[in-house]
Amino acid sequence: MANVMSEELIHGYATALFQVVRAEGEIDRVEDELYRFGKLLDTNHELKQALSDQSIDKEQRKKVLGELLDGKVSPHTLGLLGFVVEQGRARQLPQILSELSKLAAEARSAVVAEVRSAIPLDAQQQTALAEALSKATGKKVELKVLVDPEVLGGVVAKVGDTVIDGTVRRRLEQLKEQVRS
Image (cartoon, rainbow, N blue to C red; front, side, top):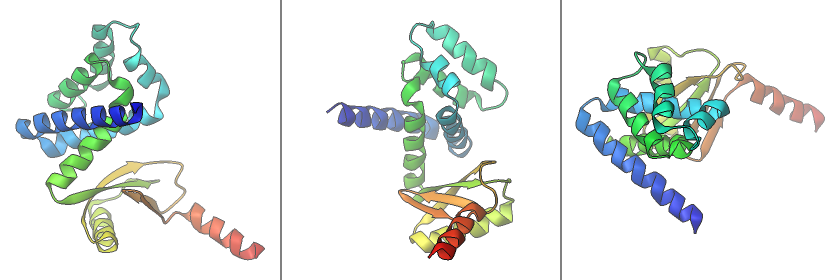
């Protein structure tokens, strides 16, 4: 029961934030900044803890956000993140922001593909990858490219529950399996 309530809460916050982002008129930039911040929180336990620790005053938690992001993201992005932290929902922020990205993509009749690459992809590479993933899924695909040094070469793309692993590491693992058999 708690899980259903949590999913409803996450969807509710994501929907509310999406409505605000859309009304502000900077949906592409703000949604992208929010998505990236959610991924940062997913991997940075200390920051997530600092923002969600209820024993720390709300204003102090918002100050941490401001020091970290002021001048690096849109004022709308900072305001929305501050609101969620103020509401005591920082722990659910990665899920809320991921859900918000899905809502934004659905509004544009698309799906979000999270792509991890060892190096940044240029516009031409992103376009080619988006087209290939669109063909594979039968849907318009919006890329969220994250640079991840753990990826040795190639890319890992996640579209919904489907993971397409085109990394050198994966190919080496497959080769080892073939040699063993």
